Amino acid sequence: MTNADQDSWSRVRDRLRAELGEDVYSSWFARMDLEAIDEGTVRMSVPTRFLKSWIQSHYAERVLACWQAEANTVGRIELIVRSAVLRSAVTKPKAEEPAINGAHYLNGQVRPLAAGDAGAHEALGGSPLDARLTFDTFVVGRSNTLAHAAAKQVAAAKRGDPVMFNPLYIHAGVGLGKTHLLQAITWAGNAAGERKVLYLTAEKFMYGFVSALRTQTALAFKEALRGIGVLVIDDLQFLQGKSTQAEFCHTLNALIDAGRQVVIASDRPPSDLESLDDRVRSRLAGGLVVEMGSLGEELRFEILKARVMAARQHHPGFDVPLPVLSYIAKTVTHNGRDLEGALNRLLAHNKLTGHAVTLEMAEREVRDLIRPQEPKRVKIEDIQRVVARQYNVSRSDLLSSRRTANVVRPRQVAMYLAKTLTLRSLPEIGRRFGGRDHTTVLHAVRKIEGLVGNDMALAEEIEILKRQLQE
Ligand code: ADP
Ligand code: MG
View 1 (cartoon, rainbow, N blue to C red):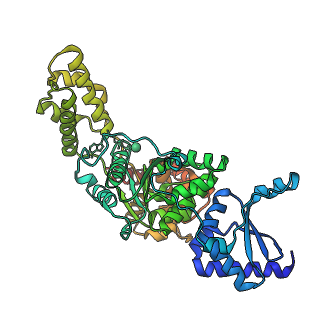
View 2: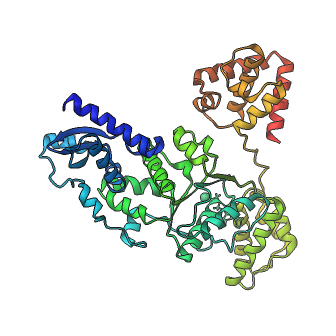
View 3: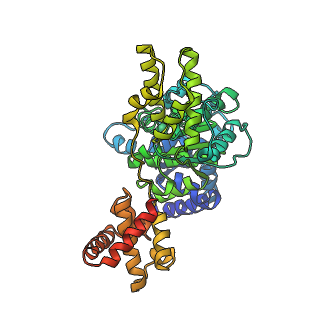
């Protein structure tokens, strides 16, 4: 390859970047390399099959056009997967690598996937759905009004409607109804038949991707993705592994850029998804982020009432007096799963012994489900806000690199609180404090630990801060 070739390549990249925007460019083309230019054919490589097929089907013409604008002798482009290049040095080059030919694509010969293609759906590994988790059985209360409204709106949207918030990102603690809401969207959306909704747990997503890449069905996978109107991913916090995350990022960008809806649930806000890189995090935060709070007593009561009604369809004799429901709603505060568990026990007891459900029986049966109040989830943002207020500095002072004493101490206190009140790691805390190193955080934590032993006033200050944060 000549220097002139390399120069052309760098100009082609500039063109692509200018035409497609930095975001799209860095998602798809940052890892594309020029391999050779040979008799009018430009050969380029990418590291994964997924990237290859995505670029082929979405950007082939564009890439070719950019080349032709630089060098009018270029007639066609060819895209290969880099690992295949290495292998071909040992074995024979694979003749089956399909070339991208501008004319071919212009003729529109890419087979579009019919929606509902079962084979393709299988390739994606849609997760099983629970028939009970629908909008009909979802009880709306203060803590979930907004999430519910957003979910409804997503489920009701028609093909071609402008996408209002993308992605829709719902976060809440365990058992507060995330999966329920996501599956409700899936049921409702698919029943309406407007847009195909695919529900995947993060694990299924990983499995689908990884296996699709390994079994060389990237093309089928990509085609199937194109048939999806709404992609729903549950428990995003479980998404792990660098390459999986890179593919997740591509999928997210591609779907959003194509105007498809993405819905995500996680047990924490985007800013707390430690292992994801900043670009993905900001993309996730760029739609609508909604938190569902803990279920209030009233909502717990309504959920229980609805559950009893549902149970009575199968067990007509099952009767739970209202005082018993109030008692459970008041005492079983943990989450929706425990509410369900409590009712199941009453039902089992009632069925097996034939005894009517009474308050005494309920007290006995659910005793172990009554847990002490869960400590509140403390967020680093809240710590920064409360500490800044206490010491009369601004939050940006805490994050800044300023080293004056009136900022250094509050900053150390805040880092110390972040370490003791949250489960965040030292590097994560450092990142959230203006991109500091984890050793800086460790130093701050040790410093404060050392001081509170002798400095009563500081110890008390910290106690007060802790109480404010945990109430
Ligand atoms: P998460 O996915 O947030 O951990 P789930 O959606 O699995 O929680 O909910 C746990 C249980 O609580 C499920 O049985 C669910 O149906 C029930 N539940 C939670 N919130 C509600 C609600 N608002 N209305 C009805 N049931 C609910
Ligand atoms: Mg769940």
